[in-house]
Length: 180
Image (cartoon, rainbow, N blue to C red; front, top):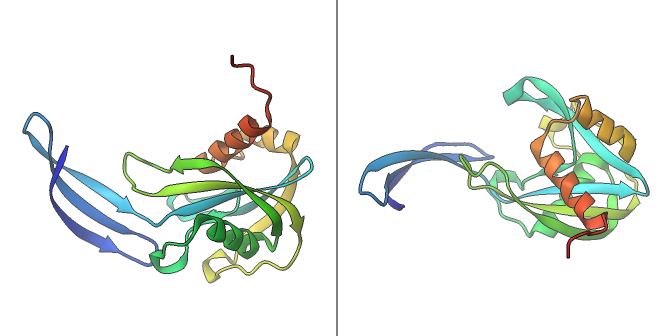
């Protein structure tokens, strides 16, 4: 596929939207709308058998959602993913990790967005006060056992795709492999 033209149609502090004119391999033309956002980080705070989650109102779906701490740098800046993960963890939860381990990478919504995400496991945690951004003022945070977390998935209280994918990466890291 070849891009034959591109124009920005919208921008704010968190994203831009562009429309790309494309030519397919058969010569036909079309368009793609693309949401460009900077690299994001998801942090899985783990203390023994407990996971730390945040809950906030997610305007696009009109509901509060429990999820792992996550986010991007302000003003669409690109930061080192490990630095971004530590920043989001402290900002949203007040936790500081003595150890951060990269679990994997995700394409958040590759059918409509260029955003990539790095998933980190945070351990050796020290508590402190959160330093939330103004738009996070309604955020709550709480610890859940892994059994409670999995129950919340089963009963539909955790539906955030990034949180679910991050948990899968955590489980794959800690599960014994039966592959030959």
